[in-house]
Image (cartoon, rainbow, N blue to C red; front, top):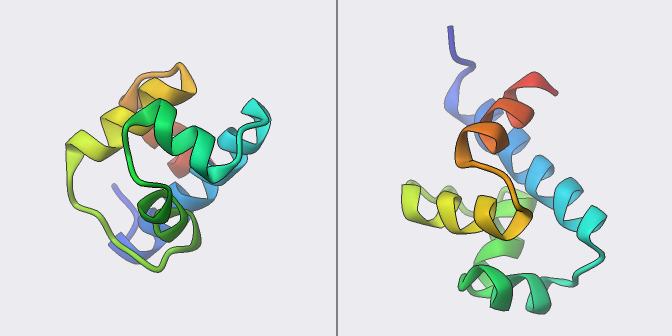
Length: 78
């Protein structure tokens, strides 16, 4: 069973932040790499925005060098 949406979103954002930190890229650099605005990435990482767009998650996962499935799995497994 999947956790409630706020828990998933919170975990998802924290996982993006954790993995981005491992790349050594700041928000602007990572946003450019992913073709996602740095402000949207920041909002996702902090939980200020709940983005229901799968395309955004796919772009972020690609920027991290993983599949969107791996990103979601890592967020739920934490």
